[in-house]
Image 1 (spheres, rainbow, N blue to C red):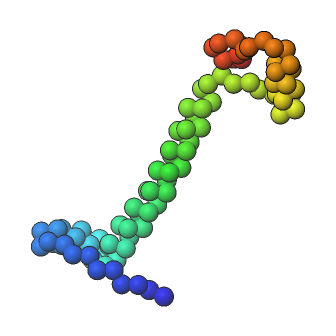
Image 2: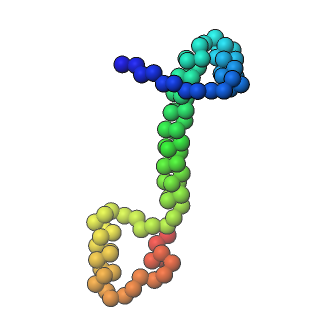
Image 3: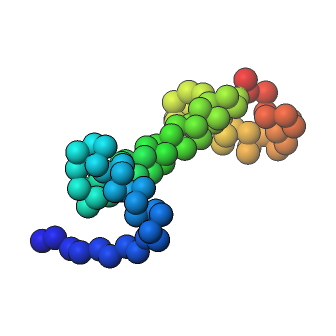
Amino acid sequence: MTKRLQVLFDDEDYAALQASAASRGMTVAEWVRQALAAARREASTANVDRKLAAIRAAVRHAAPVGTVERLISETERGYGSGIDAPSGGGGYG
């Protein structure tokens, strides 16, 4: 099913749309559909780029490494020792 979308432009903006469409040999409607599709793709890519940037920032930090079992064991040993972890990241790095 197709849906109709009505968008209002002033004369100057509409003339610019017509010129852009004509220079590509397409109708204004087709030009607008393609522009909106490109905007959706860009928005989707921006989301991925933002996530990748967050991952890259996270891996720059020092953190404990090892199997889950080893990390849990070390954590539990730390709780049982009664000694507070030193400041500055707990010696991991």
